[in-house]
Image 1 (cartoon, helix red, strand yellow):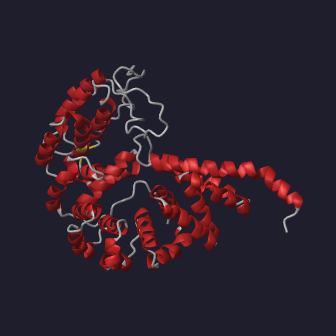
Image 2 (cartoon, rainbow, N blue to C red; image 1 turned 45 degrees about the vertical axis):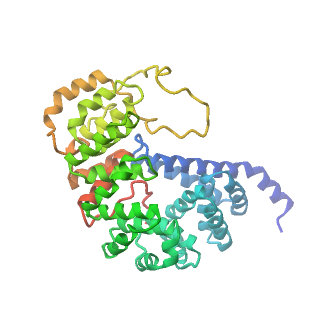
Image 3 (cartoon, rainbow, N blue to C red; image 1 turned 90 degrees about the vertical axis):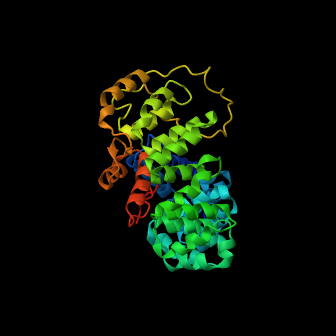
Length: 418
């Protein structure tokens, strides 16, 4: 039995463990969202990961008390699901693991916390569980295993083939698209026939990821099938952008961008497409967009992605921020508003940027694709992936997978544990 003195001491330190759990959840959220932010590098993410681990390690000092805190806090959000899930799998206790899996799969909003937790941990703690989930009769467990394999970029080998041949898995709204996407991510050329079958599915997500995987594996003839996903608003539009404007020939990509530009409401998409394509012909137009407050930061990022010229490093960013109250939408004070995609981008100094481009534009050949100032090449992409900012690393990973048939799609958001 626990003595009264011990209970008092535990109660006295309870707030410390609550703080450790809260901080772990918060710092993981920073890691999760930072993985696709323009100001984070892989080094920044690893520093965050160390801080997450430090708080998770501290919870192990009082495992029973910490588990109670973690379990009770899972209803608060996805970050808390992550912390509880890491704790549970570290404990090796089946009942705790069952509990976090139940909560993590209960709502779609919780999925990323559970998946990331299993991907976060070393293989010796989770590989046996991944295999159990793949063998489970519960289809949601199979989906969980596939998603974790994707995060870890680990091949489920024969399990993936079996899932793609089972009628119940094919009918599952989450398993089937995730399996088809994994085929492309891992470059499973032995399963290409499954991708062609997926194109005929009634599941719109399965259809998209089938085309996406085929393109990633080198079948550029499929790019035209993603035209509707690029030109029309849909849940897959940005994923379609990311792969299509890297796979299309420059002239054809320009024609798609012209179609996008016919709708003034889609100007931000035109900027993104130009950025991904890397066509120096678009730079002068992008400099013009830097004069429009709503688009100036996004256009500045596109300029950097094409030319490799960092606005802050080369003192091409405004030192004092402009007053944009009259040009931009009013602050609604709505705490649920999503973070702007250009929240952490610098404001370009348009005149300085224009002068720099005037000086160096002759170094860029029209009709060629550039990424961070150089023509696309394996060596250059590997350098960007190793040292670039997170959005640049994401682009480099896709470019590498597209030009190197044997290269699986690197996970720029991964913690990278064995």
